Image 1: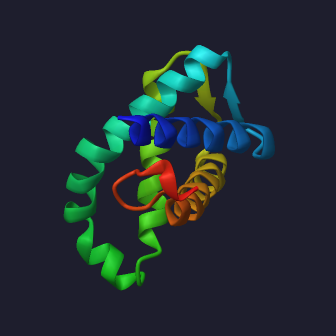
Image 2: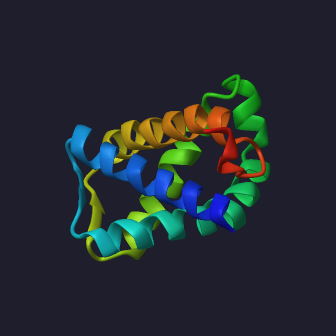
Length: 120
């Protein structure tokens, strides 16, 4: 359970970094930030696998680059579901998704695949 909380806070921190660095992404309030991080986890666990399977031919043709578009779409979906979290356009969503993905990738090296925070 503590590893899950650490990952949740890392996603929330990466969303905050994306909101600070990317023009067009706004998050109003800490509660919205934490809820957006949780909702992003749910969307990535339920919706993203279905979308990845359905777009597999496009992903193959683009050598995996279409996954960035899928990540941007998942971030846009979360923003669409939350009133106090907004993304103004595709490029803002794409750059925000890249920041969130890179942050998650880097921190996974420290936390591990099973969210064990004792490796930090």
